[in-house]
Image (cartoon, rainbow, N blue to C red; front, side, top):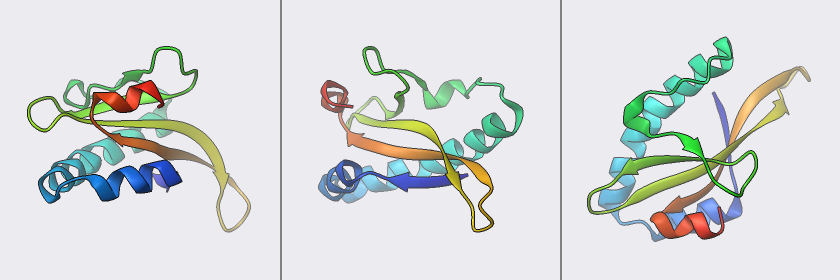
Length: 107
């Protein structure tokens, strides 16, 4: 899966503690594997452990909860199509925000 990161995501990520970053990277491994499967099959069924769902009031934006218990960890993201080196379209995920539940105010 191809990923891109928004400036907001980069700024949010820098604010995470090292423990939060470790938890996030672990969740991202499972997320990337699942995203590859979803993109290949078109079957938008995600593992329950990733808690993927649409963000209410933000069309096309999704949320993944990577931790409920201290610290609260959430990621917002969206699908888009990018072009590979040959100019062919590729499904891509833009990571928009990362942090606690509060990121859902401006996903």
